[in-house]
Amino acid sequence: MALYSLMLHSLTFSIEIDDKMLSAVIGGAMVGLGTAIMLRSYGSTGGAEILYILAHKVFSITLGTGAMILNGVILTIAASFFPVERVLYGSITVL
Image (cartoon, rainbow, N blue to C red; front, side, top):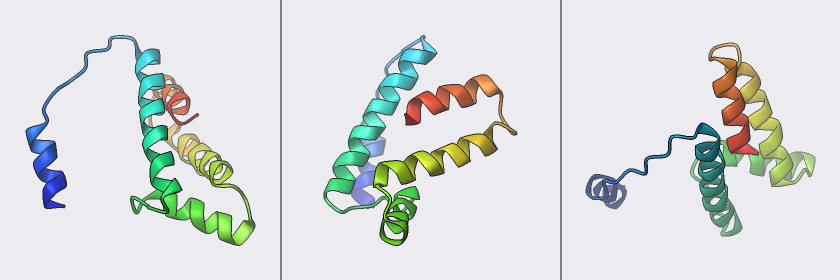
């Protein structure tokens, strides 16, 4: 954890992208790649990935299907709290 905190503190850069759609697609690709690498090595961030793995063991559904179901539920709930446009950009990110 200390190494992670140190790296976050020392690596300070930002990429300015004005297009929200492009940001959603690139962000989703980066998160998806990182999650795929992590799950292929049987790792977890301690977040929703644990629920995907449990759903796989209990209901025999694939990790991707479990992720889509849980993300769909989360985005549906988020639509009642946030503007629909932002929720739709979020749905593009998790696709």
